[in-house]
Image 1 (cartoon, rainbow, N blue to C red):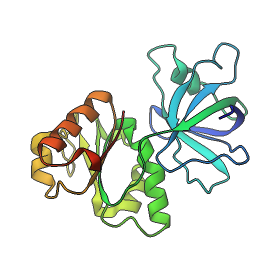
Image 2: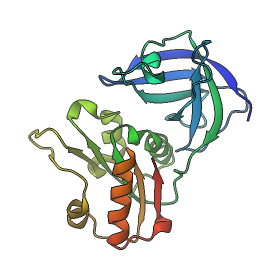
Image 3: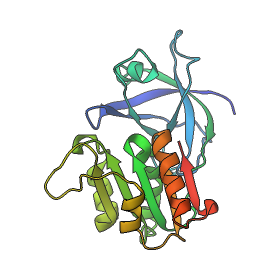
Image 4: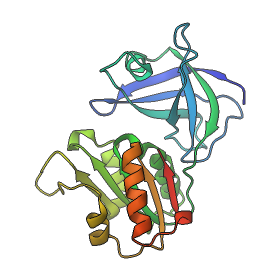
Length: 222
């Protein structure tokens, strides 16, 4: 697929370290909810530094959207994106991604691993097909939750928030581990969607298989 140079329409922080970019959508550009593209910044020192980011918009919309975690502790691409605003140009490359919706199930996300699920949830909600989908979303603290209000509106009681470094009244200070899965999931024959840091995905996938989930119903992205 050819590379597309697109202009940033809007760039705003939606949490203390996650920035939402709205960019132009090239004619004929297509993707499936859950997929990503390689993105670079259209500046001489940065245009060959590609990083994968997930589309969070609906495919029917006339713009593209990305929610990107900004790492300020080293001079990398996301640090530069943290300083990139409306009017700047990005370069979009190939569309790819293993996460696609295969049917109702349990979505398990860690941190910025929620991003492939946002477009999927928005699509299902728009089509009135969100029922019987559950999101278990783990973050360090409540300040790290991406799109909390919208996810709550879409999923209602099927939105479960876990915090690993915070005990807030009304929320669970827990990790998603084997014992948590045993206590909170009764059907290991349903679809599972897992996305987050590499170790998070590996450990949860391993636990799910050991608890009876077959590998062909576990959809993962690291």
